[in-house]
Image (cartoon, rainbow over all chains, first blue to last red; front, side, top):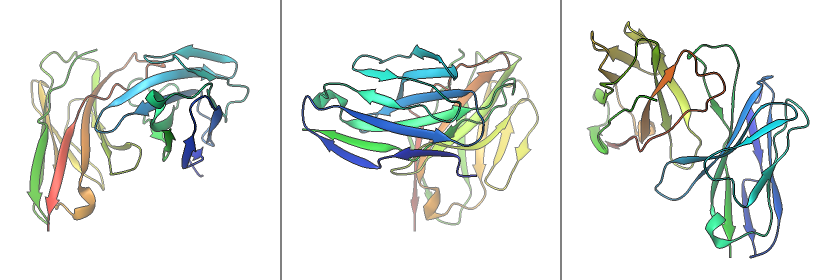
Length: 115
Length: 112
């Protein structure tokens, strides 16, 4: 049981380039989330998904896109990278039905530098 | 969601107990109290949670005030590896798919 895995661990992008951050979980969780964390700051929600085929915007969705074709995978797409997207990106998942007692599981993060 | 208040930072000597406080004066009866921590360069990880009674697990203990308006995360013997940002988060029982909302937390430094 690997939990939540993310690739790549680190990436440098040039302004205007695009990339996809991969996230996979093997716990059969329906709920998945993408956060970003800027240096010294808290986590901000980018997008989330409550199940395959269903996604919704979080607090800071501009410049990003997501898809959820399977329960396991929740990739985050950056189009036209900008320096403001330099951050650490965390993927997370939640089981359903915990009624407030659910544990949220996080991946190890992807560090992105846009130059 | 009910708000939590934590000190910005705390310091502890290695192998001594650490008591990390959290105030949540507007907590509702169905809010669970969760604690997560974020080690340097890692994603947040679950530590412990509780509703009314004190809780113990292999990582820590959670002491909840009788009126539930505050709680304390207790690390019985701090190690250098416990240096992290600790987050106190309230989660209602009807949260559904609502993600956790992380505040600024308490940055714990452990001195050898």
